Image (cartoon, rainbow, N blue to C red; front, side, top):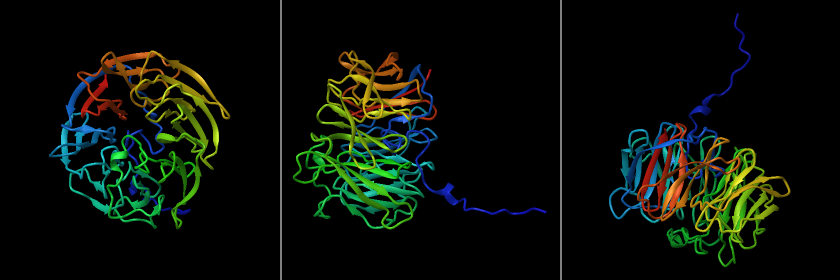
Length: 413
């Protein structure tokens, strides 16, 4: 005789969740720029392509090796999906309303794409036909998955929404981080977003930790002297789903670029406009420590589950790593001979990638995060503009893109 001890609902496998690769800019929802995939130290350039326009956000990679790019183009297609493991063969493309290229797309585990355009949030299936489209106030930042197939969207004008990722309907009521926004003027302040100026309330993608149910977003409130950090608490299965938990002006000079959450969701790491790296408690926004970088990092730091923090990049920067020691930061190493122009992308414990200045051009630098020494370096042929990021697939392929619309794909050699 067979006895049934009980049963449970197993429908969760159909809920949308992030792709098991590099699903969005800065990797996971915490913006950690880290993947457990063991990175390749020796690479071979397999193909290059141009989007025939400009890029301001890194590519996203799906679990099966597809990549998607949110370009700004003078005509024709702007959102493009290519096959990374087949010489960049284009699967499909379509044109979005232009003006929001500074935020990127998101892949789920079923190869659906989620992307915003000014005034709307959209989802595409593995083909170019729209799954759903929903109106929003502003330009959606790079979206994040919460639990139960729910999609977090925060627009550049501070509207916070949660969507059912499958149907595109909102769950609960929107939350407004900024009062008095004109819903008919959804493009207001767009020009201030890329340079992170005061006219764009939310100029960087939020971070979300499933471990602590915390969302952290930078916010430049109207009339304020500098942008602050805002913490939201996610209440799974409750109403409201999101509540504003705290506001922190601890970084008095203002924050710059996306915040990053630690693996356990307890700490927020963020660049200060005072040329310091800051760590704050995710529970209340109060500071843990700050440490001088000696330069202005314009992209987010990369953070490993073990608490190693590799600084962000930009002009006149250095490649430097710190260890979070609780109430202070310990410098682990510093490379003053390297100018990283992008955030580092860390693949496992022993491999990191960044785009570094190389003479008058740029190179993909492969380094060891433990001590910073160079493992390899690959010049980017005829690269112009500035790098918008490095994506690492679960097949160990590495994709680099520049603001001039050039895309370079490397495979393990």
